[in-house]
Image 1 (cartoon, rainbow, N blue to C red):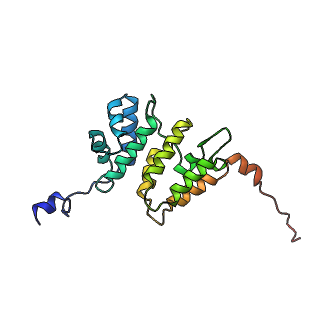
Image 2: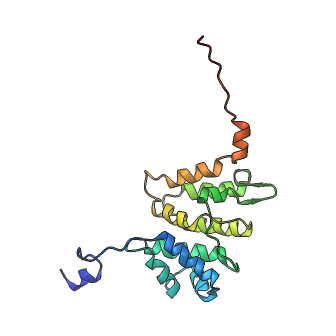
Image 3: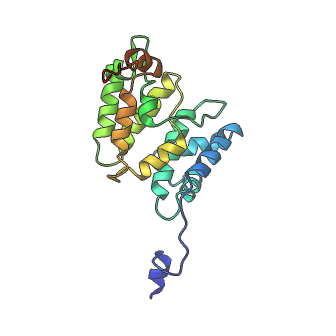
Amino acid sequence: MTEHDLSAGTDPQRPRFPHDSAALTVWLTTLVRNREYGSLAELRRARGGTNAHIRAGWYGGDDHRDLFERMAFLFAIYHQGRPTPSYGHGSLGAAARRIGDGTGRGPDNPGAQRLLDRIVASRRIPWRHLQHAVTRLRSCEQPPPSWTGLTEDLIKWNDRKARVAYRWSVEFHTPPARDRETQHTPTTRKDTSS
């Protein structure tokens, strides 16, 4: 084995470092909480290479450095000028349901519908459309998707068994719980066998 092989990370004896999506989210929310505006501004630079990007990449382990750097970028875009951090909740599909205005949100908003359609139709991770979705959520003053969950979903983006894009689409189009209860009240069947 040559010195180049060792430095390239191909040494079978070298320990592999796993990713940690939750730790990335904790670190990013700490930046907001501690008002580390310089680091957050570095993360908003789309082309990484800054100390903050490199640190975000550490949480990606050996296999997901670039993805974690890009997730930190999305997080920083959403939190620009925000004094309190948001861990977010739900998937991107559920979050996209919150995009819109007084005339309609989610499936009732043509812009939100088109945006989600572009996201779920992409074979590769649709970073530009994800940035647009995060920006729209921010401008609508709606909570983002769970940053940890979004990171994990994007890691599995090309996993056919995970069906991330399909799940996001289903969650986007799922009616609110109260509408489902009133529209789909179970009917009781009378037993006619007697």
